[in-house]
Length: 212
Image (tube, rainbow, N blue to C red; front, side, top):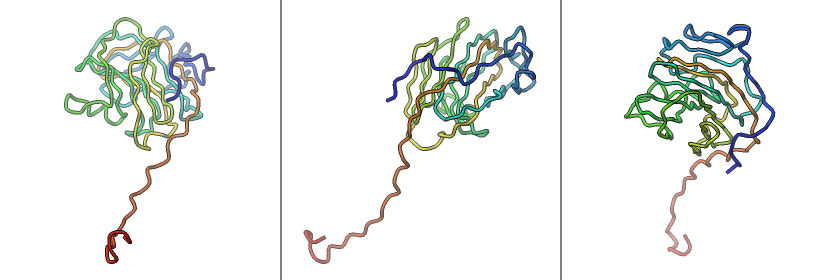
């Protein structure tokens, strides 16, 4: 298991919203804007897919995304994504109000989130004032932190969701303020090779047990 934890590595990207949403290079749905240098969701959006998208794609697939977030109203779900392929692939680390928990799901599973469709991993959590949410994707391991403390460490057991992917934020019926968004590199980890395909075998006992 790679050594985990927020580090002092040089940033790959630091968001600067001081000139407004468009000048920052970010793209977002109508519920997103910039106020006083912060990225803001007014809570009218209902997408559980990334709806505010950063203007940068990391240069490798092992990296961390961290955002400083404040919930100001509403109660749906929100979070940050890594390795998003533009569809259902990638990972979303976020909060789901109905469950009062921090959850890790694939991006495509967030729209289906319910008490019957459990997350990959979860931890009891209720947002209170500003907090730092961080997701690390490293090889096949995904880790989530709150305010620098690890909450979830999940080993992903197949070879999907390993592309570099895009990064961003979603807000579903939740009013948010985001005052920082940073991407930092992590040490590169070679994922395990694909599981070998099963080999067929036909028994031949014609010459006895030992000869077979």
